[in-house]
Length: 449
Image (cartoon, rainbow, N blue to C red; front, side, top):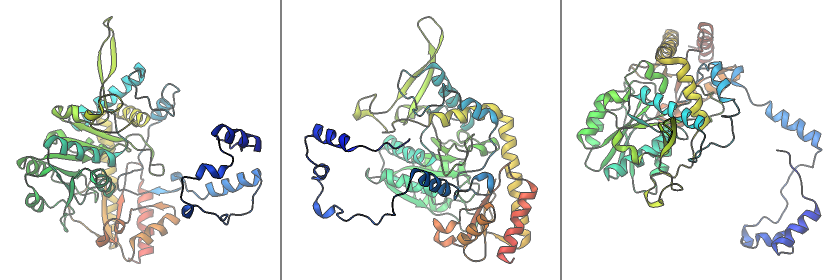
């Protein structure tokens, strides 16, 4: 938006309307000791033309994903987005800066949300799904709060191999609620959650157990066994899933998950610079009225015609504050629409093919890197991402490869200090044989393997 400065006359009129003589009076409530009295050391003023040129120069410092070959993982992935996704989401009846969340939302918007919910239920094998949350991390935080409310318990067990962002956000959510978040260790050999340790940590104060499939290291977890242990202790089981993987892996409904969350970015959303994202959330029917967000239903109107309506919404502005289960104000409506269009375009077989293609490329990359002498950090089964140990500082390798046009990582030392020499790599259906071989050759030269 263009900046329009105020004239001296504008300032006088505003001060007069406020009943003060000078701008300084507006800051009288701030202690003198906290006010900066000296002018900051700013550069000399420049013309509008110079300002525009400088803005363009700074913008050019950013690198587009089109300039990089992406092997980055950790929750956000470079996947193919069919043209129909952008074609539908850019239509003026959908593309808006305001996410409609009021009961008077149009029938078209409500139908799109209903279709999205239906597809998420089919994808996860769960009976209920909401019309989305902000992202996978906040969805996990909401799920833990919901589990604590449902069980009246005060301790949450989260796998240490679960997304660091989700764990950190959940801790923030729980900080003022009296819920203790405890991490379950992962097995050093396989990278999977240590189920023996989990069993020892369970007790009658545990509200939920949260495990990710595949986990942050890319390892495939024993979800049915973890869910069984949680239920034996009277706790709810939360499954955090990567949606594309459900094209080939068992859906959470099959291994008796109570709550399902996930990051929906792979479903038709570009990686961007970390967003916008999409929070997936599904649950068992008995937890419907505790679920955050909103649920769109399908019915008929007074004339017997098909009609969609905003059936449930647990937001405090729509129901009594004391009964609100979440303070989420809106959702990622346009992102949810993109996911619905993507899933409709792919269908079950297309989703399975995408998952298998990505898995094939990842295993090819894994094999070639191993042949050069790099060692996998974990020996467990994986789908489309894995961890390798690299000589020296993994973060430095990330920077060097990025400078050579290849986006990799993250380096695990950022969140796991004991894995400072380890790098997370992912491959999707977008990666070609030449790109895979190019990365392997670059890593071999830089690592002197």
